[in-house]
Amino acid sequence: MKRKNRIIGAFTALVCAVSIMASCSASTADENSSGGAAKDSPKGTSASNGDFKYGHIQIPGKDGSLCSAPIYIAYEKGFFAEQGFDVELISADFETRKIGLNNGTIPIVNGDFQFFPSIENGIDVKVVDGLHEGCIKFAVRPDSDIYTVNDLKGKKIAVDEIGGTPHQTASLWLENAGISADPADGEVTFLPYSDGNLEFEALQNGEVDVAAVWDPLGSVKEKAGEVRIIFDLSTDDFFKDHFCCFLYASNKLIKEDPQQIADLLKAYRKAQEWIYENPEEAVDIITEKKHSAIEDKELAVQLIKSYGYPSASEHGSEWDAKVQENVQYFVNGLSQIGYLQSDPKDFAKELYYKVDVS
Image 1 (tube, helix red, strand yellow):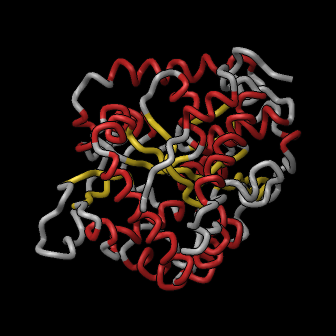
Image 2 (tube, one colour; image 1 turned 180 degrees about the vertical axis):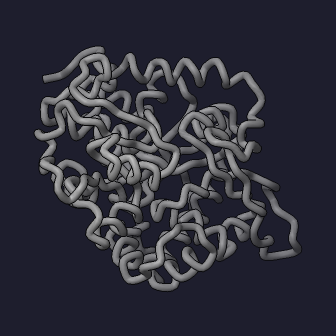
């Protein structure tokens, strides 16, 4: 049953915060502090003479998750540079990403459907591509009495940030099972932690009952016998075989310089295809350059392969239709639980922008 006006209130506050902050300087992207952004040195040069067609840009890509593998590879292998970008990898929370996309200071980010409600409320962003499939897990203590979503009523769930992908994934999982994720209803409580390791500390200390985390942390802890996984985005019936992460581009830049977005997608797609062909070497690069903290390379390769990175042939004539179908799928799901109020078909059409990368 569709829950009108539920959950929306919680996200309206986030959207309002963005609206207030959007007129401010995007200097938060230069702050090495919690909730802001931390910088990395630019990598690579252009294929010709060291000049970059598009100059210096910032891309959020320092979150430590394996989800961001295409960003790490495009950066380290020089795929961004080949397309004319002097890329600086930064860390940026959900709010910073939305502000940067809205005003064009951040051209592109990866993320799941957590952006959909904000876009409905006016953030000037478009889905331009799909990145990969599942990479989020929900963990409990091995001795926990929680086994299914139906056991979560009255429980505390740790997430990286309110409004982020693990939070919205958990909310959708709960709502589909008839459990309200609206904090006003008090059926579950979400607690934000700035780091996945802090989530696991809170789990072990009994401060929370569930830790919703990005890979590889959940899988590492599971293999060590420290947690039991109750939800896997890559295998759950609702989420499996659908994109975990989309690529979102600033609509301001799409209007002003669509070729820049097209060239960014070329770098991302080349990285996806390279990972598909070279998963072991991709893991070597990611671990050696310390983009993700995972020592178990065998596990990392297994996870990378499970994300369904597309090959060059998959990036063919049917790829854009697949992205559009995934957008519609999650718009429908969020609409059914009251996260979105727009007509699903019209909103999905407005949400997706097909970029000509030819």
